[in-house]
Image 1 (spheres, rainbow, N blue to C red):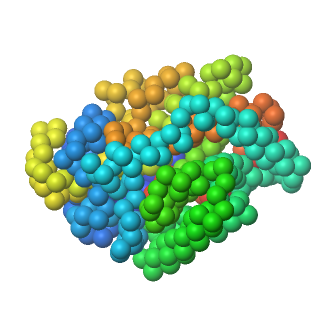
Image 2 (image 1 turned 180 degrees about the horizontal axis):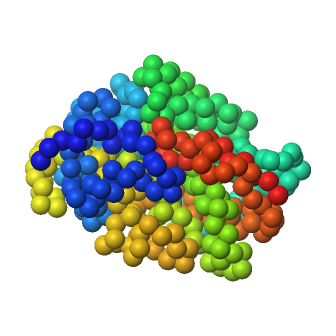
Length: 394
């Protein structure tokens, strides 16, 4: 099997609604293939839905980012030397208890109690946008502030600091950032969160971090958890708000479906999540034993990168996978990953997306794009796909 002379992370999209054409070709012709990362590391690339799900459930594929063979997808070190291991990087038996310790923060009961506050936040930001100039940038007016404010209130982080942590987390997920910039952003974010956790130890409140500290004798571990939740809790949802709004405004017939019957919005959210699957290269692993997968032998020590967006376009998993079908209602997509490391906050993200889309299009029925799709600035260098700006008017 010859190694592809390309990087799975730098292929340009010819269409903002589709994965790179080369990824789709691989899915058809060579669904498990070799590729080279920008740092020169040779890895296996998975493009088929069944292979990705099988790999993500197999304990012989490790999520441990301290492993020197773990596929490095970011610009700098994944875990600073001497730092605690984050939840996302743990393997059994360490992972299970650590995940269960925080899982209670995302129960259906607790998230239901958050709904009224999320609705308030969305209402406030839409009203502020309506009172402002036109055209407006939906990213800065709504997409970023809503999930940022929600995760800040959940964690107990002062929202007044959101500019600081948004800038740092954006740099950490930008593949175009230099290793020096990546290291500086990480050090600044960690220092901020150490001070934040220390302040919560002295003055606990009714928030997730205070509750975690009350159950733990390891504030360093709580700091790492805060970093993970703060980073993952706003930018990914913000990207989905922007992309979902763009797609719906670009497809008036689809938008009419949820405008006519808001009860269909949850199914529409699932389809938008599948259709974009913005964490294209999330879920990288390293084999810790020889494993045969899809008829291919992957040897211990070899890295594996699943292309989730491409996998979510697999015809064996989804009928007419390239069609955006808002009434498909398929929740078995991979937008939140799969297996033991499936996204902790997935149901919070769903609630935010449902409330945003239902409220936005009912409060501003004549909302429309203020720039052609081909001119929009997409996040093609980020670890998560999205938009830098989305001009809209009404």
